[in-house]
Length: 262
Image (cartoon, rainbow, N blue to C red; front, side):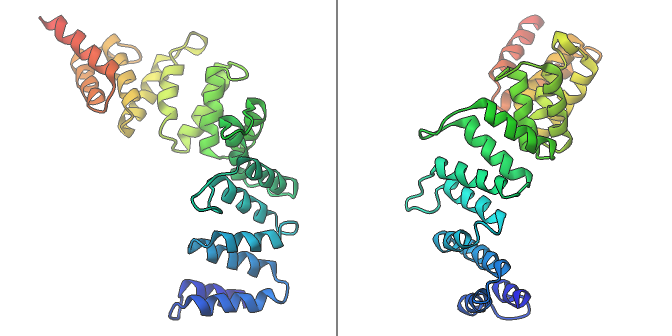
């Protein structure tokens, strides 16, 4: 019955009809099927009927932990009001409820950590709680959390630890985060763990992604010959690309090189 309802809701093997799909789910729900309740809630979400979806998730809140996570996202994004108005207190409540009920997907820890990291609309900013949750998500493979935890260790929100910053940024970079390679290129030039070859490696990755700061760092390494053979002509070309992408520091270096030629 659930599979039939899903196929009706997706128009698989049949003509799509909203009312027919909805009624199919409602028939199953009468038998107390939580999977059907979740299925119908997901169906409502696809069509922007968030309040109907929220009512269904509330029904299975204590028996289906993911329901609390979904409600948390609704309140975080403010989709239950018109115009949208986030409620970060309720969002945090439902994310924590999901965790307490055994929902262990990395994204719930990431979302809860973000709330405490940013602190907005009167919601408390608490970097300790933020980092605790973000590290759980990061160690579970969530690449956005990996980047943010690396950023926190890099800038000392609670503790400045360059080695840990590198470890988390490497996790994020390996998972494809577009900003971590630039941070690694900078971190590997710090006295604590200076390694210009690694800096050059990650600066190249950042530049290939098109990150203007990464391009600037690569230009610097080429200009000064750090981790590579000095090549002012190549540095100039990289600075030029970085400047075209909006990096003011690259403009300064271009002017410096032009002055050298005069």
